[in-house]
Length: 212
Image (cartoon, rainbow, N blue to C red; front, top):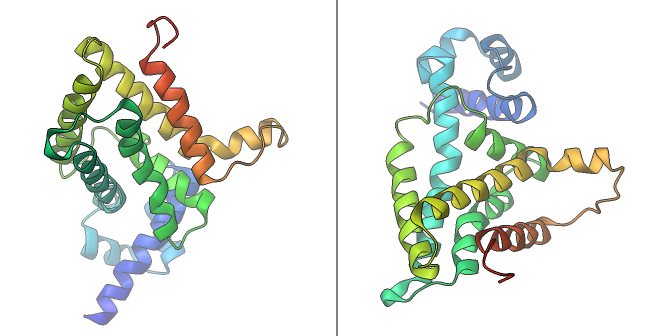
């Protein structure tokens, strides 16, 4: 049993690094078995297929983030309290960034993996992720409507979608800006990046409100 667990862990960790660097479309089963030093039978035994392996990694990283999002939102709205927009954005974004401190990967590689998990998918979300994502969407929609009652629901949902995109793009391509500007953009730490995104998205939610 211990040997099987070790084999599965080796496959997961090797695949995570490959996905972070190259993306779901570019990583082959041969790449995985070579990096993990296992045979194809081991991947099939533990996961059934390459696609199932990818789905397990998505669930492994995204489910804890969504759980933390809901926990933070619940704290912000405890006893029927109306959370402020900035608090809601904090609950929506921070869990992606705090996860890096619990990973054995480098910060940059972990950010790339998280970005891949949420936007670089093959087809739709894995079935195992759909119920939780729906709950996140519903819970944050209620909180946002309470915080910004004058904002039409359709507009609010699109702006939440844009917020998701800002975060995903930053996670996946943040290092590209450093290269393109030769460092002129500075090298903000995790907290500075998070607060910068919250400021940006906060202003986006208030667009068209007369400079609010």
